[in-house]
Length: 555
Image (cartoon, rainbow, N blue to C red; front, side, top):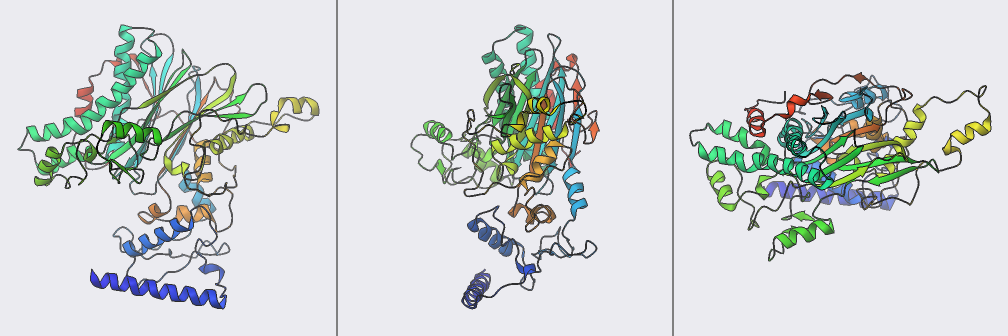
């Protein structure tokens, strides 16, 4: 360890002297050595910290640092990555800069366009996922439910941002909609037309009951049966030991009521066109629930008086950024439980600041929107924070709104006069997004201070892929941002970007004017399923027991 510190110190001194000589002599480095030199997607401090972390964690002493290929490099030439790594999954592998067709393939590898075709309020939704971790720690759920009362549909759209592993988000994909739909089903059986607050309480119960099963009931089962095999016990506890932010949107097509429930820092935004001006408007439906959020900090400190370190540097106990999440049992289990698990080889030592858990809750904040006739061409955007690092709420609405207009076929000049075309096209006299009139939008700043607005591009048929591409650099050709960021393999990629998950839901009956994307009827991984009314008669305990069968990997 001492030798490593000495080598690191010598390396730093060497780099420092080299840098000084370069500045003194005004040396101009060749273009191929300027690795990320002109990118502004991260601040200088973030770049230095990321490079240092990548060097100390992954590089070998004898490793060389080849550069990214220049834009003119032939696609047939294999290019090495700028870091040689000792990570087992990357060792002795060659990684080249992705070309345009390879970028498109990677962006669309886990993306789909779903046409609902039920004529009940949502006619299309687009999804996309891009991993920085391997396996990706994000997940999602898309379920259309035949409502137990009335003639409408219940539509659920879930977005889950995992951390410390994929185990919690994977379980949320399978279990959150059944838990919430059971609570809603029980409510509607008793009261066919419940008030909004009662629906909120039912959704919240679904969230907290599932989290109790993940965190508290799982460890109780382990303690109840001391004869459990250690591997089975560990598998039972994995969703509790990792964590995930969870967001679930519930849309009742009969009442045209949209509810968005959030536990964490995923984000939901409603975009709609003003019927008078023709401009796109942005309405934030969530506020990031983090230790740096003043309201969340006030709540947490009130729940834990006399603990000045309950939030440090904007993080729970100085470590966890989200103040609400599923799993994350180390912030919820008692000290006694954590000591017992640690002594049994099933957990880590308790946090030294642990006094009065739980510090983190899965109880959601719920926002309700009544979709009125005045909100034309409305769409819902749901994303994990991998996109909001570089895209604001206004950015996302501008991207999808303008994309939507570009997809619609233009009228023929021979059949429509210029003044009629001007009247029909509000963008001929108005900006794409109305600003600064943004409703309830405390998050309308990019994730990193000082980040310039990226130049947008419109080349994708899938609206969710379109968002992801622009979050990675969009039309910024200098340095080939999108190619560079997507070319990085895991775990190195996590130094520069996060997992990305995006869902865009288009409200309305659908007129067939927006085309493109890979259409699917919905199959597998909880996507696009239509659940009949009988499915509401489900026991959440049985659901959880089935889901907690020891898994050897993702299905």
